[in-house]
Image 1 (cartoon, rainbow, N blue to C red):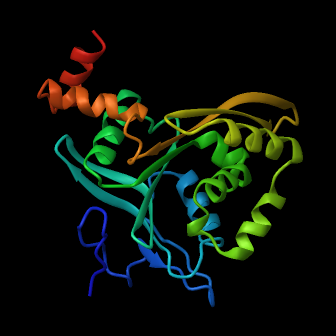
Image 2 (cartoon, helix red, strand yellow):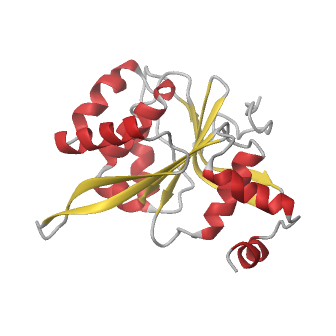
Image 3 (cartoon, rainbow, N blue to C red):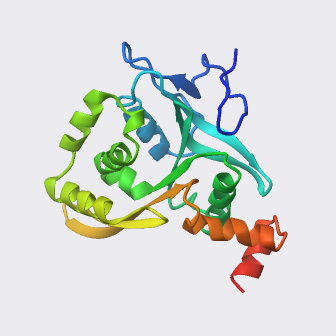
Length: 230
């Protein structure tokens, strides 16, 4: 029998398909896709180790909105809380398309939260990304993971994240400064970002785009871009 998502009221794929698994802490399970990129494969392999018993994780879930149908890189469901995680690799990031897409997914309550990470951070700072997730959404992670994930971080990076988490209410965007180690052994500091968007924030940054589309009765991304960014 299919599991139904309480947020968007649509049936999920069956549990015996590896595009979706329900975490059982007694044995390790791994999503088999489909995936759009190598960074999604790496992220899936790691996050499944840390989720708590009973969490349902799925890749490429279709979310239908008035603006169109979109696929979420990853979706996590537990206790009727639905989280979408997007990994923005340079070749797949769509700029303003993602802006309108997220606004409609949240505005039509297809997800409670959307978090976006850069592909570069998944490659170079996966521990930091996992740490951000456990700090914002500990309900998805096992007690063991809540203790162990902070130990994956460089101390300076953890302090920077803690500082910014304490200062920001996540209406839209948070900037982080992580260290990256490149293959040429040159250590550099670069500006990174993640976005955290929350459906129940009435004045969230995403909402002005959702309201603009409805106020102007426009439900086409190209037309919205022409009207909004003229």
